[in-house]
Amino acid sequence: MSHLHFGRPLSSGNLLLSLRVAPFFRIAPPAMLAYRHAFHAGNHADVLKHITLMLLLRHMNAKDKPYRYIDTHAGAGGYSLEGQYAQKKGEYEKGIGRLWAREGLPTVVSDYLELVQRFNPDGALTQYPGSPALAQMMLREQDQMRLFEMHPTDHRILTSFMAEAPGVTVYRADGFEGLKGQVPPSSRRALVLMDPSYEGHADYLKVVTSLRAAIERFSTGVYMVWYPQVQKLEAAQLPKRLQALAPKSWLHARLTVQQPDSQGFGLAGSGVFIINPPHTLHAELQALLPVLTETLAQYDGANHLLVQHAV
Image 1 (spheres, one colour):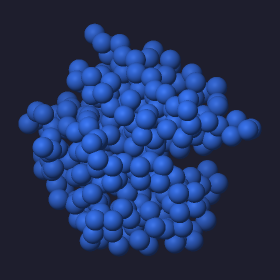
Image 2 (cartoon, one colour):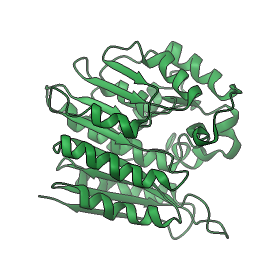
Image 3 (tube, rainbow, N blue to C red):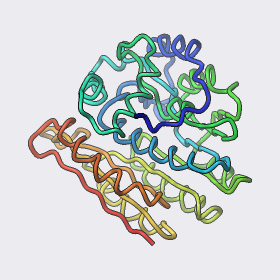
Image 4 (tube, rainbow, N blue to C red):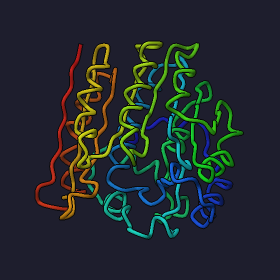
């Protein structure tokens, strides 16, 4: 039995059209905006991020009182898995692809797959929902969504199917800077997702600075940070720095599925850090992470970590 609450209907017609066109745009953005999540959509990092996001949205939906969902780096909102970007490395094949037709999965994974299946009405895995599309499927009529995206092409795609939806506002603006203007909402309930590209070194500091300003304004919000597990000192230090920001409770989960290459490059895994997590999240991830570790492992040393500080 599904435990999902589906809110607003997904306007799939315009969305799917936009997603099929998206990978073939030939706009050359400035170097600082060169990151395109379409190359990585549906990979192991997306699986961890989006299952965790689904669990947080479910928690927010448990109360009738409205809330605001804020995505500081929204991307295009959804992605074609048949386009040249996704096909270049086929990262989704070792992520959502390994779960798609698998049987006997835990209920929480089945619920996540149900969302992805709604994004693929023809039954084949050809599209992958980004965080905005996943959230749109779960938010209710009384809830709000605020989306930030700087990349010109991704912003245009995002706007084409999200901007006119009730309660949704899309900004072509820096989400790090924009977050502080979005909290606290009048309902005093909010869920924030912060998942920048981390392509350079600056994003790690910006995450901490932006969150500090938001927490000073709204200490009771739920804040979720995704980060890549790469061989950078800033990546290794980020969880500790986020712990120092948390006014009370926090939770840190990490999934390691592959080895870096011979030069130390590559995405070994990823982590999520939640400030003010729901009390149910630790038990849910404790049951989930061993399954994801086994299913998504690309080498014998695949592992996971789960730590929390509860007050």
